[in-house]
Length: 447
Figure 1 (cartoon, rainbow, N blue to C red):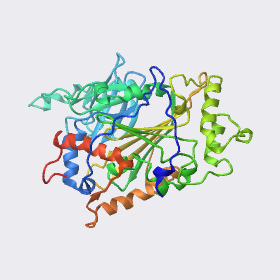
Figure 2 (cartoon, rainbow, N blue to C red; figure 1 turned 90 degrees about the vertical axis):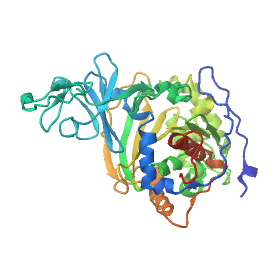
Figure 3 (cartoon, helix red, strand yellow; figure 1 turned 180 degrees about the horizontal axis):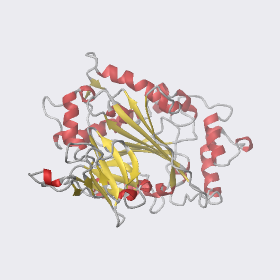
Figure 4 (cartoon, rainbow, N blue to C red; figure 1 turned 30 degrees about the horizontal axis):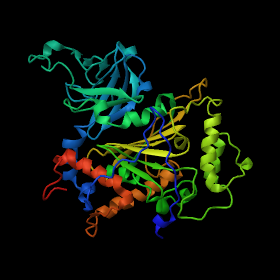
């Protein structure tokens, strides 16, 4: 089927002053070359990514409200490294590598959140009790006189850059990295209107997947796969009339929800997933008398009219944002499905040693109506794919990606053959190449 002939007209919203920009970004000239499969399977390419990407960029560390008090910390891992992000007395956050200078023991043994406020505000290595301050400064060596060479001359654990934006803590292992706001580019302007600081944790999961981290980024960067992997969503969203926008490092798509795909006929009754959206907005599907393809607009009007009474401030969002999915990729490894009432945030992390494996973090947040009590933060869970369900749609992606990774290793597969609906993948790889090879792109023999 030629989907271009089946497209319905979706009128663009009028951007609100100070709200999320909606205009279409110019399509970049990215060519049509294959994306080499070795980028997903090669240990050499994985090492190159570590040296020239992961150690150079800003990375998502955790949620700011996880560390409200001095001495509270987030311990998070990226590749072979573990870092500590620690709230200071002045309200700032300091960061340093999670390692003791004595024998290399990790100061905090596992990822997660904690506090040293009750331990005199110091990190104390469990091996020999070397002690460090909230900034990583070496404070005490037991039996100091037995070290004739003295204390390590650096006097502290190597620091890392830390900043906050969007109610999240970010870090970089690059001492010369540009300021966070400069790195994020358009992202704050686009996402600040959602007020993620008003949203509470509802899910915190890490799943081990048998695929390269980039295969996961790819899977959430286009809607072309909806017809194959998520057929049930064709009665929930319009996977054809999608706006793709590529910026400097980052990109997005805007996809209509509460709509039906042009790939299928309009149903005679309201599809269950759309009915669920209506019920969540306190709109009774049984009382709706309009056409199926009018539900999206009716739902937008209902939320605009009743949101304030429900304690939900939508004033910084345009009407389409009250229903639609604005999906962003913050380069290199953060994917966000952003909605008026919730945010689904995914952090795709490389395995420390194996290019065929990754860690997939699922962080979900929901808007808390004004005046309502915030729910307790969910407990972090960590398991392997297949051990537990992560929801129908994500289970479908998780089932498929190991097969993608296996195919990437085939001698019969030279690389990714991308179409116009996959422009975000090509843009992502262009940005990756800029970091790995410079702005002239890969040379002969490079991947």
